[in-house]
Each structure stands twice: as structure tokens, then as C-alpha cells.
Length: 120
Image 1: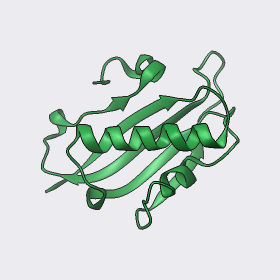
Image 2: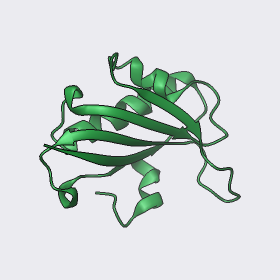
Image 3: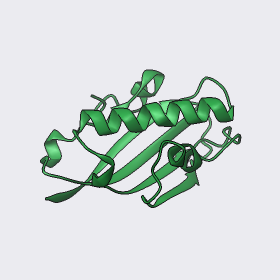
Image 4: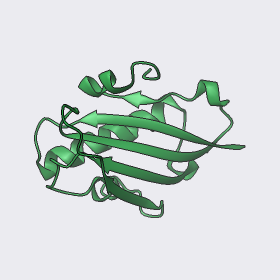
């Protein structure tokens, strides 16, 4: 079994705690599903949010999905002029038998434009 990193992102429609919880849950579910992972395969997850998201922590949203024993942390994205607004990104460290080339990085909705080179 190897340790792999899985990237992902989603854009929120608005800065609202309910929207944060719904979109983070959607992103986590897609990362797990597309990589045939269970929650026991998660080692840790780093979340970042653009500076315009202040309604809640992405990690709190992830906790509400039942991730009680997975280490989570949040940070703020760089405030770059012209960057896509209202984006939550994740970097999940997982245990998997997938080769690095088979890992599916998940960019949902408009966030797919962030990494056209790896979004699947």
C-alpha cells in the first residue's frame, strides 16, 4: 500500500455556512468515490479557502460528514487579483494501491477550469 496525494476543488455559489457544508461534502464524496477509497484510507486533509470565504471552516464542514478521527487543517489561499472567487481546495493524503498515474483528482463545476491538466 502506498501513500498518495489527491487534489480537488469546488467553487461555492455564495459565502454561506450551509453552502460550505454542502459543497465540501460533495467534494469529499467525489474524491472517495472516484478513487475507490473509504474513510479509513484517509491519512489527513489540508483545506484552503479563498479570502472571500468567511462563513465557516472547510474542516468543520468535513467533520459534519462524519470524519471524526482524520486530521484536518485549514489555510487561506493567496489573495491574487483575478483568481477564481469562493473556492475551497483540498489536498488529501491517502493510503491506496492505486499507482500515482491512476489517482483521480477532482475539480467540480467551475473549479475544473483551475487545473484542466489534471481534472478528471
